[in-house]
Length: 558
Image (tube, rainbow, N blue to C red; front, top):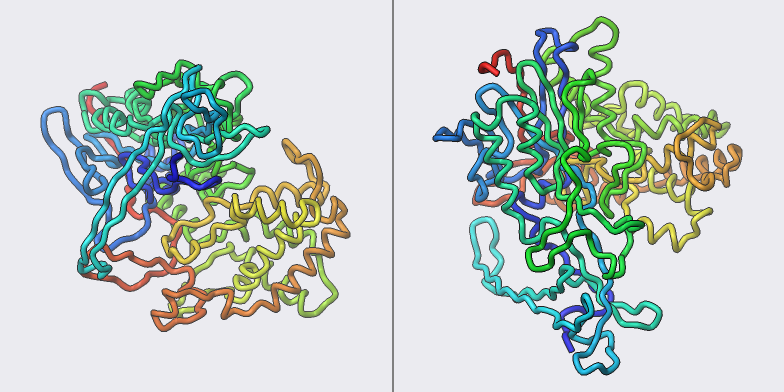
């Protein structure tokens, strides 16, 4: 028997390819078409959110050689090409897309001699054969450095592999022992995507928006690619999206007999969706925004990224629309400002809190009424988490503290009575209620990527009697009755006002910096030391680590 994985165990930390894993969940982009630009040329402000390091993991490079002419950012160590930057007369960037290219398959365990298998058996059945589970081992060792004084040591990493991917767990289905294997369409094809990056850097291969889309289609990773030149803006969603068997969604474990169409286990390839079935656009609308949101109607997210009706890209939309409404046209500086305004906005306060305040109404309790007034004033001011006067304290800090304490209590009050405590807790473990600026102590800047924002908003809209698209099977808050929903939210708000700020904003980094339980420090961005020099924290902003502000005004002959 193999003892590599306990029953129900999971393998984490698998290398996901050419780009560091920290680049996977983030980044934003704002592009305005020439018709909405004051100069008559497209505008673009975009870049990757890849947290903060000292020194930074991104490097800027300028590459000139036969077939290469580009300048921009690349990740140190995998910087053969400029990955996000500009060519002679165009600029491009990307945001992570997060569509589903990973599936879990259930393979029955077996014994080569035909005897009954157990949950610890070391063979599995695939296409009628009883095959041995492959064992992969790697030894890692380390020594102290200026950035990390950890004593020298080593570890042996061990994984189990099948024809349908790496083993993640063992279980029984109707009494039969199985292993679950996770298969990623880009597995063992990580560097195939270099073809697309090579084209981005090659002026002979990239002359217009359509060339850009073709280049992006060669990238197997799930990214949203954005492009601007002197007349066009363009978008293409890349990714080796496997064609699944009929009736298979990919969200749940699938019997091995329903493997991907055209799957070749020896080469690790399958039939993928065609170029034309990927979300894409060239011009056609006043502006493009991307902040890891749903790409198109009917386009599903990955198992860990279930899209809802609220996205942080809506903060960008709102800022751009304010600058191009009516006869207005915007400038590059105006687009930078739009990005900057969204960077300090609390998505919960902007998109969801107004609905809760409508439900709560005007409570007779004086303490609740005061808190509601503070929250409404904060929302009216723009829902920002920022310190404009530099005194170290957020404007509307009391309202911000109230929402920070209220949010988890509000969500539990809204959904737990209908779901039940056990199911609510399971769902919370699978999908966090919130992705707050603190990022569970990570201090990485990025926030509001995942959370129950859309779930809360849609349910409250229904309780308020508003129409929604694709309504849920039931109304959750107060069992769908406005009066009962109002009562539970008022009670949750009352409990939030009793929360201890010392516990609410408890953070090791802030305590070490001499700012225990400090609200602004709790949000602040920290630089992770990767060398011998450290830097102090900086104020929170939800924006790219590296950005381009591009306005191309000329072009080679097309």
